[in-house]
Amino acid sequence: MVVKLLENLIQEAGFEHFNWVPLRKPLSMDIYKAWVQEGLHGEMHYLKEHLPFKETPQKLLPSAQTAIVFAVPYQPHPFPSTPLPSLNIAAYAKGKDYHLWLQKKLKHLCKELQKHFPQDLFLPMTDSKPVLERDLAVQGGLGWIGKNSCLIVPKKGSYFFIAEIYTTLTLNSRSIPNLSTDLCGRCTRCIDACPTKALRPNRTMDARRCISYMNIESKSIPPPELRASWGSWFFGCDICQQVCPWNIKVYGAPSTPSPSREGLIRDLLWILKSSNKKLLKTLKDTPLIRARATGLKRNAMIIATHFKLHELKEAVMEYIDHPQLGELSNWTLKQIDSANSSSVEHSPSSLHT
Image (cartoon, rainbow, N blue to C red; front, side, top):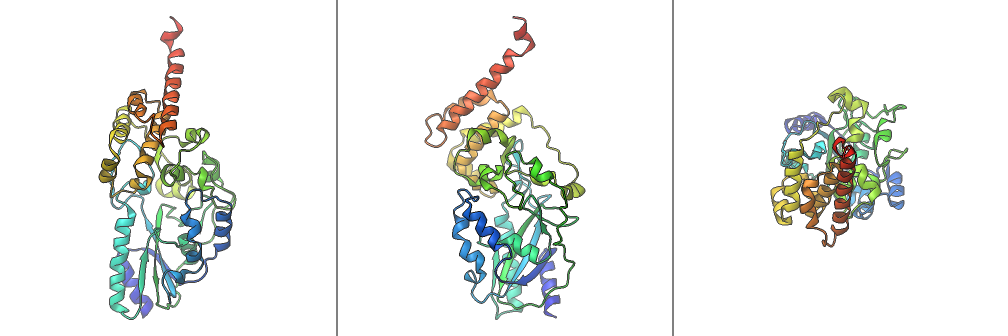
């Protein structure tokens, strides 16, 4: 009776992939602890501070007994938005920030649950709370953790947000097909494709080498040897998902259309010329603000180098004396000059002068 009621309420709220599990110490807690101890979390110090809450979930909600866990697809994005159409942005960020719309959706569901279970508590969460979400999803049989460290749902791929509701409800198990069997097999396409070698054999990653970490989470300027590995990724990176056979079966082989030079210059120039306040105001409802204004300008310079955009030299030069971006500005100018100088030297016209 209770199980059927819950299923109906959750499905009416628009969730398709879900389950619930007893709230206990995560199965992957020891792996997570070792990962943090190795310093593989980089500058994300909060991940170390979150350890006690992840190990003992009741620290977030005393008396919590159950976690309702959801896998929410974002390909295609449910709320698409393209404020910077020429830039290469990870699929999850090509729309309204999921912290806004997904949290709103969860809160609405919690209100409905509260009506039917007034004596119980419900705490909705996206990844802004200290929860080992993939662990819960695996416990709930929603999928398995692939070698790219993402949750992979059979026949659905890995383009999913994970969210959860902690509740004081004690629930009987829900009978669903268990999809958590590891089906990566001998495939190592994601590991082989990562240009910065961030993926490790034990299905964890060295965040310090991950392109998404470097162009979103990190406040630092990456070393020169890693800057060149970014490729065209302005915000985030989907390489390890794009090459996964489970995603190719659903979405086809990856293809990234070449942006027009004019479009790249327009979008990057807007970033470099805009004030920090204007950037954050314009992009406020998108995940892009997570990189902060300085991070977006850092990314713009590295992308300008990748595409050898000498048209942006003047804009980049304005940051020569910037306390955080000065070294990168100087490096960018040298790289662009070097690339264009080399291009002139090897052009047909220069060979006959």
